[in-house]
Image (cartoon, rainbow over the protein chains, first blue to last red):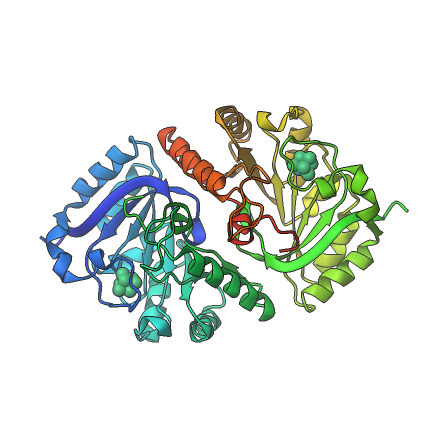
Length: 241
Length: 241
Ligand code: SF4
Ligand code: SF4
């Protein structure tokens, strides 16, 4: 069925932990499947086809029914994530949710452009830096920006582990100076175990966050916004929160 | 001198750790003196007159010179905080900075309204909840909203320690439904000492953050944004970062 969406998990409401809508209550719809294999991917269960049996093919109606149930029928922000949600047919779901007052934010690496990006309330393009071991197709990234158009709030979010990633982030921003840019310190998972946050290298995350702030300040990149993954600081790498 | 501003400290650039401009690189100008005495005030050194000898009376020119020096003459966001910065004559400083491309965000409890609020780029009104043991003058808070006018991005930020504070936050938001509202878990300082964050009750802060997210979700207050004090998570209660 052409309208069927492969779903890894639907959960919430919780708060959005990253980027432009950080702190906003949201329900997550995580789709299954990804055209990338980032070296540090922290959602392999929504990427690798060995987990395929855990993904459910759902209609837009079934997804909206679950979102409405979780949110007690009170409209809120729906966060579409993955995997790469851009490879799923999400236009109908967005239309259906909009009719009922829900808003939609989507995050993708920008490797697949879709016309329905223009229906989104927020689009976060998160092209992957060198540490991911992926290659950026700049033409397709440009098509994603163009597809979103003027009615969608589009932002860039770049994960930064090291100096090379930082230089990459500057290059992405140089290409799209009109887009707000969010820098996010990388999270190697799993690392040392911290009592407050099981499975998380909290020390490493905080050190990388401090390093990234220092870097931005020294470099005088004052247009960038630096934000950690808040949900990781608060709940660790648990799923479903 | 009528144009002199009492300054407790000027530091940065670092990132803004709270509210509407969280994560943005900024230089802080903290003024000395406050008309409140919140039970949990974490900047007593900028409030209590026993610290008065540490505050410097500075001209707007001297303050801008320091901001320009710290930012390497590259315009950025200047965060005006206190104490209560609204009791200082800041209009001239804002005009001077704007001419050079700097932007200004100010946070105040909303107990004093000034015409120059309309010059600000961002105004955060942070009226104090019951746990502060302060009383809100609703008329003056309304005057602050009105003074800011349509050209200033105005937001509400409420610190929440407990259920009474939460109910207060809802009441503030009910009065100003047009304003975005940020909820911030309270930070009792100092608490138990954590290695990564000296002087901070990190466990208490994280527990209060989780509690507040649960509360907002159960209450379906999906218009609220919940954000912790990021700088406290990253650097603890150190000054000057
Ligand atoms: S693009 Fe995202 S989901 Fe896909 S492999 Fe990379 S990190 Fe994982
Ligand atoms: S209003 Fe702010 S600066 Fe003044 S006493 Fe309260 S917490 Fe401290």
